[in-house]
Image (cartoon, rainbow, N blue to C red; front, side, top):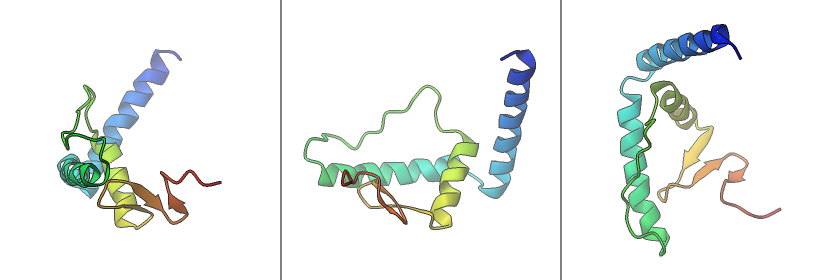
Length: 98
């Protein structure tokens, strides 16, 4: 991958972030609040989890990614239960059944 590819990827990422901010103002803040609420619920159902404290990565949440996740929630393509476990119309992501 050369410089042109990377330049294009950066431009596309910046455009996605601008579009996300228009369609989902404060997407990062909204998802951050949801993640914190789900973390509290996760602690309540998982005895081995000691704290609802979220670890934030160096990269952080990005506007385009959070807007996409929120769009899936809003469209009811994805559901996250009170314990923070995601579900699709097909079932639970944590389901280990065949």
